[in-house]
Amino acid sequence: MNWYPIFLREILIFERRLLRLGYVVSAFLMPLLYLLAFGLGLGRRVNISGGSYLNYLLPGLIAMSSMINAYTWVANGLTMGRLYFQTFQVYVQAPVSASAIVWGQVASGIVRGLLSSLILLILGVAIGSGLNLNLMFLLALTVNCLLFAAMGVVVGMRSKSHEDTANFSNFFIMPMAFFSGTFFPIKQMPGVLQVIVTCLPLTHTNHLLRSPFWDLNSLISLGILAAYSLGCLALAIFLVRNYSE
Amino acid sequence: MIAIDHLSKRYRQDILALDDLTLNIEAGEIFGLLGPNGAGKTTLIKILTGLTKPTQGTATIAGFDVVRQPMEVKKLIGVSPQEINLDKELTAYENLLIYGKLHQVPDLKSRIQELLEAGELTDRARHRVREFSGGMQRRLLMLRAIMSRPRVLFLDEPTVGLDPQVRRRLWDLINQFKAEGITVLLTTHYIEEAEILCDRVGILNRGRLIALDTPQALTARTGGYTVECLRNGRRYYEFVNDREEANRCALQETQGVTIRRTNLEDVFLKLTGESLAGKTEA
Image (cartoon, rainbow over all chains, first blue to last red; front, side, top):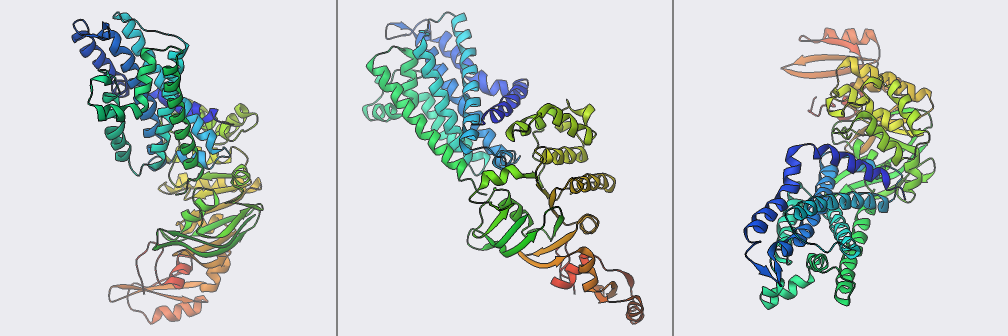
């Protein structure tokens, strides 16, 4: 499967944009602000599940930031490439399979998601937060990036304009970032909301990043993330394969 | 090389972009599709290159069906679209590199050097495409299209918006492709471009092929000479066979009379009563 050229192109463009301040600000500054404002403001006073708030907050911010970065770049890049720059058409006219196109995009989304996580990790450790960094943590983080990159492909393929991707982000991605146990435990929510939130994938990423242990609960959460990922990947490949203007 | 058989494309319910088009394009020729905006030229190229699916009919390239065997077709074609879809934030070299890897071009590095030299872009290889002039971008777009040594090349409005000097350089490049044995399907609404470059021309109007022949035969059939004149502020055209008849015809007119050789624009005018630019004439 010839996915590498697609990945290479995305990464080269990403590299160019990283050097432009606007992109860095929008992609990395927001979770950083949360970390500093909530973490330093509440972090020393509030205790959640026996630990400091900063320790509670950091994994949540990593989950949120990796989700937003994996999703946004892929969804926006694909929407703009398909509708405005027509660079997506180059892929379609080349002898590469739909799966190669999707995997190239998703792989680039994973890199972007992991990079933003890394920045938060370094910062979090620097201001004194303890994390359980193990294989399960890394696995959950990677699957989370994969899932939202694949979702980015689905949205990027379906959007009829730039506003569509922004709307999906405003009505689905952002609420999920706030309600899936990023800033406070979902046990503090009303019952109905708890059920809804438990169905959302990011809730399970949060759970896994906070307690990355090889127990039944974690495996169930990982299974749910994997199922969502497979669903999004299959849909993404279907949409690319049946692309017709 | 390209066989198009009763091809139709309908967008939504009401827009018929291609209407029962049947056409054969021979190996090694430069075939020009001429027609006003919205005639269906780009739609045809999109179908042949796998960007959109036809509503009815079939098309094959070198015997491969464009809908059922897209991978085989895509290995044989190169496309230079109307919209310049290079990655403008990347360098010329990077643009060619990614395209070459997508198409699994052998000896990629030396092929890229070869193409950059052919396009006189070697010293700009490491510059971002956004810094290039329109003519240079078009040239790079065309070089990218021939990178995988395609047997069929699609050029959709290859010289649109360029000044005449730059246009001529691109024509030289296109003639070079023909010399290498590549079949070229080119769309244009520049009359001169079709007359100079193309072995045969098909004229499309509202999704239908209304004329098909060599440029010389098409103009000869319309009448070798055109008499253009002004009556009550409107332009009228008479198509006549020889110079004497043209003179006689011109003598009957009083205002703004011109006699000239018939061109492909006149062919279109005679067939449709409309000019290629789209406004209705008598």
